Length: 160
Image (cartoon, rainbow, N blue to C red; front, side, top):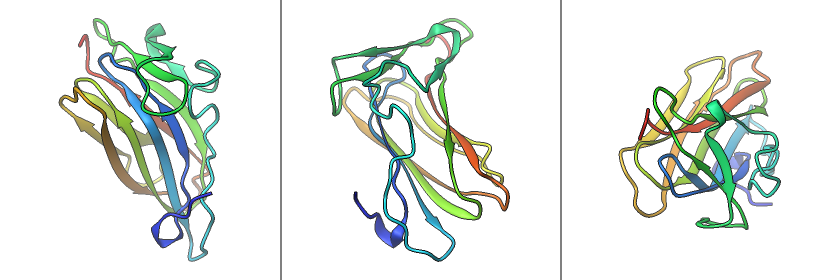
């Protein structure tokens, strides 16, 4: 296990692909719980899409797993927006209340978004307008006093 700076926990999730929205590589959610120093652990299930889309939900059937291109591991997510859908793929992740987390992922493609919802405080996201090669997106948030789960997501832009 890795220890992130400041004792934050790291949740590694491999996501990848090459069309529209592609979050690829380490989708990591790291957190500092209270004042305790915690070891980095991956609490996301099927973080590398090695088991297909298991534990992930993608809107309008927009997501699929591929073996190439990948940023790391043997599989990646390819999410393709169409029409009024933005190819949003989500997973609920267990977190600790009153904790600070950093979410990051490797992405490839145009208008790729990464974020967290249901934080109990301010929901966050990061995005890039284009990325012909792999690019890392990062954002941070703090959970609320009673927050035990957040939804992490990646998505593209409508019809692109």
